[in-house]
Length: 202
Image (cartoon, rainbow, N blue to C red; front, side):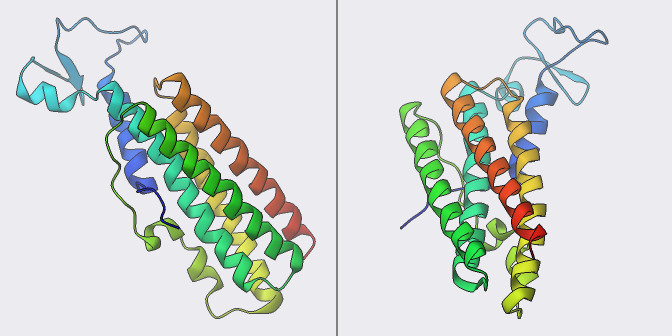
């Protein structure tokens, strides 16, 4: 089954940071009146071709937010497939199967929302970019050693995914995109809690 194109976590974080920088505020947090100009990195840019490329559109904002969902989904799916194939403990194997199922559904939802909103396509991430080090952590390990290394790595990856989704949710997204982000965050948190519980039993 083919996945929707995804954006790497690093790209998403950079996009969110750029969006925040584009919203000029004074020292009290109020929007600055720049007479149609934009503030980028503390400098006021006059309207023109440079401003047109510097200011992030609402479509790009939503696209970046959905990229966070898709990137997190790609990481979860890759990790879940590792557990389903290599875990020694039946509970860890089942965990992997459930993770893959949940995040394939989320990928489909992000795809559907992007189509409905006619958003720009998102660049594809490679499988290595989606891995976030989980495959490296379990390489060459078997049995209980695999399960322990896998769960430790998946906990770290889930923490990173939550931070990424929270940053994406802080932007001014449309309601449909916010709903997808919220669902993705709930799933990541649920899987994080399950991974911690499984790890405590090993």
